[in-house]
Amino acid sequence: MVLVEAPAGCGKTHQGADYARDVAADRSDRLLILTHTHAACSVFAERTRGSGSRVEIRSIDSLIAHIASAYHLGRGFPGDVPTWARRTPDGYRHVALRVGALLKQHPMIATALTRRYPIVICDEHQDCTGDQHALGMAMLDQGARLRVFADPVQRIFKDTPLAGSNPAGRAMMAQTPLLSVANLRLEAGGAIPIVDDLCFEIGRGEFLGIVGESGSGKTMAARAIIGLLPDGVRHAVGCITLDGEDLVAVSPQRLRALRGRAIGMVFQEPMVSLNPAMTVGAQMAEAVTTHERLSGAELRRRLVAMLERVQIREPERARRSAA
Image (cartoon, rainbow, N blue to C red; front, top):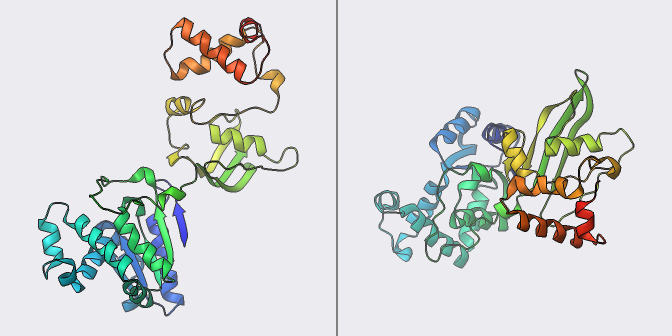
């Protein structure tokens, strides 16, 4: 399984359509494309025109309804499941719930689907419910090759799970890295690259060490992530996402709100990190009061507690001291 996760506007649907076209041209295997919108179906249809019966494009709801129609008697559905689902409140969610249970009880159904469609593309997968997601996972378990395109921030459908629905409703989204950097290029002095095509991901609880010689761009990459590039250095290309949020596209006000709360940086030269004309407490207070409204007494207690936490001797004195 390949999970391609990127923010809106990065061309995920078009990339998926190009992948589908290339697979259809190079292989004899049938390809199944599952989308959530008719607009996406149109994009895939245009890009794979001429592939014939090797490519099948469907919404995930239509495929689940098709399975339900084949087994409607055992699942308590009428013969025309799509019509029933459209006329019933949350109809497609009920269908997905029952089909999810069916796939769990009878894995040979997923086996048959996988033999017919050994390659599956799932577009805009962030809008899947847990039971819709279970269909893709059932095919993956039976050997299907999945390529999944998603952006958790871009969800357009409300997630209102039904009673008894799959609790792993966002199982694939749980794989979302906390920080993702893709194809980052930084340039200085016009078009001189100082960082080129940098890619990495960091999950929750993970540590990543970036090793390189002096001047290789390690600090500049970190400053690009936090949005503090110096004058003369520009972000030329590349995506940076923090917990699914596009840091390249956010406003300076939003970046300021994130810095110190969701993301921070410890610079490599501690001797120049504090202003000697200000007290330690005043500089610490600036970061705290950016995100919280505290009384003077509460703020002083918070600052002393922070100094105690890092084992600074005489924290009250340190707070009042000049840096």
